[in-house]
Image (cartoon, rainbow, N blue to C red; front, top):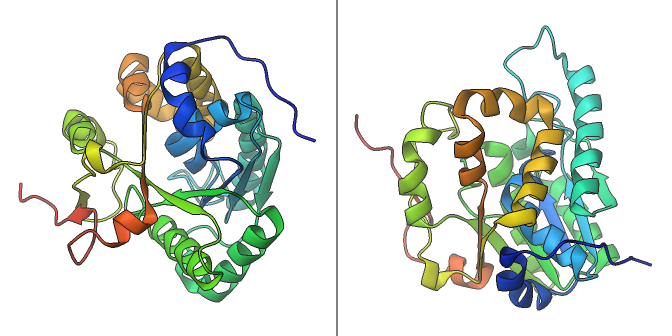
Length: 269
């Protein structure tokens, strides 16, 4: 039985709760611990506060998510990131978390296993709504893109049994934070997302008040991934960057024009 978590009232929850409430039970599928909190932390916390079931699933433990392999060898980092994920999700009110444990950075090599895993999750959890990456993986990370394809393929093969929402960003958000994202190497290729117009979004949350503080607290629990970034960009800028969450229906995204939906080549200069 899933208990309703108490929460202090705030404006963002009031604005978004109706749309979130219509999502029903949620299965949130990602590549690394922290993806779910960055892209859907406010949405999932709001759902839990409404008494909705939220299950998170992560393909890897994120054991290679560092540039300092001496301090953080894979076995150590993977172990710590599992603990961090548990702490972050507890802040969001989520107690159901599955980590498959495939190799971080190599998900594209495990398509068959990944699709089978997603199919099993969809069958066992039977969610009303699925959350995952859009075609650009938010940052063009190959693992993110691989999970996008796994989820989409499994969803389609099972007859599209739930509503599928892809994480997105608006053009306004991308323009506002372009100068902040570039110096810290957010994107993994020369491509850059173009964004999804607000009118095309299925759900668009602007977090503030206690809900934004809650997401920030969850992200700070993932210290191996967020502490250095926080020290570089500063708390006010970081908080502004994480305050927006946006999603597009898969059916709408998959019919948008363009050979690489949601992306464009890197600007010269």
